[in-house]
Image 1 (tube, helix red, strand yellow):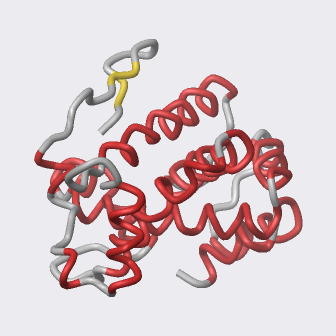
Image 2 (tube, helix red, strand yellow):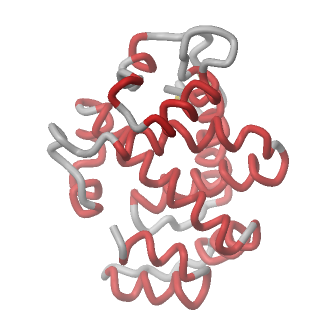
Length: 202
């Protein structure tokens, strides 16, 4: 996974690897339409590889760098991750829309695979066990990220790039929302109902 080893260096994998390969399902066991999308997005020039998707995640990590440098008040750990996926999706949709199938097919595939074998599936689970899930349950964490990727797509489709701008400015405020009801109200009134829907419809 793309990650920082200090506050200035972003490290990305340069070749296909077992972790990426572990997400590829037997294509004869997924719906034919999804199998076709997977081959189109990740296997046009040979064997199916998830590398095109994981390469895009460097932009997600840059989103973290930007919001940390700007001192945004993320309120929740899941909001920090969702923000970076909105950032990533907005950039691809606005600047490189031909890559949208590469960005969205992988999370669709993961979410459609279900949650069997996962110990954590709720947003409160993620808040309480964020470090544990990320370090010890990478596939479970990948499922959360996939949910946020699909949510980011829905958010962009509902409100365009203005949602990212409103979210950025809203999270610059230092007001804290310790309860979800207050945070949801802020997202509805200050950002966009599609962002609030991530919590309401989880």
